Structure formats: structure tokens, C-alpha cells
Length: 66
Ligand SMILES: [Zn+2]
Image (cartoon, rainbow, N blue to C red; front, side, top):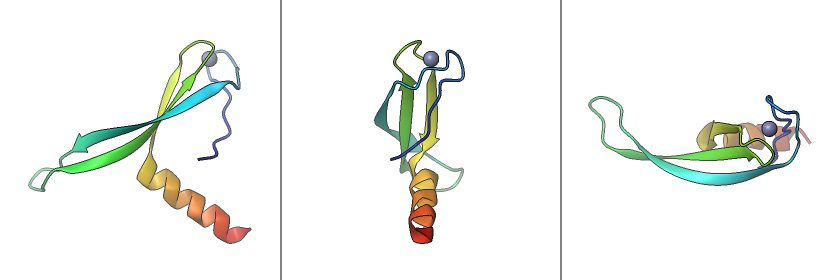
């Protein structure tokens, strides 16, 4: 995963990324597991969350352009 990151709170560019699996259920549908990336600023702890399904798809589009 390549994400440009500058912390919105403190401006730091130091961060760590972890993967998180969360059970998701739409009404009337079976349970699915959603994958998310959790990006945490190492300086102040500000955390952003990304849907991996969407992020990975966008990266494929970017790769195709290069
Ligand atoms: Zn920060």
C-alpha cells in the first residue's frame, strides 16, 4: 500500500499501517469479512481507516496507467 500521508493533526509524515478484519453485515445478506487498513500517526496517534477493497482497486487503476 502506498499512501501519501501527512498527519492532519500534527503534520508528521511518520506512520504505521496495520490491517484489520471487521465482520460486516448488510440487512438480509450473509456475514462478510471486510478488510481495512488502519494508519496511525506515530507522533500524536491520530488514526485514519481505509477500506482495503476500494484502496486496492484504486491502486490497480494507478498501476495500469504507468
Ligand atoms: Zn500526528
